[in-house]
Image (cartoon, helix red, strand yellow):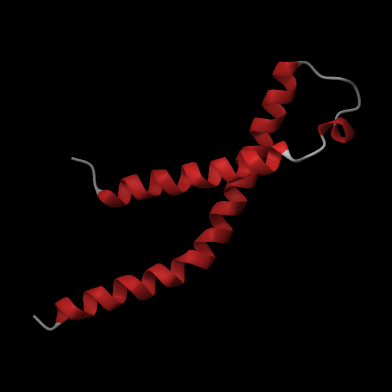
Length: 83
């Protein structure tokens, strides 16, 4: 049986990847590409941009959500320390 933390890590990565894919879709690739590219080339460019943006979202959300999760976990662990 897999650990809950593993599934949450994968879920967090999928969330960041979805945010990156959505943000990459909002970019203007005609300004980036000098000539019209094939569908495969545009897809690979969007995939690469989505992966870079996903990493940025992962780092940003880790700094935003991380302290909140630490506070929540530390509160629940403090109750067990008395036993």
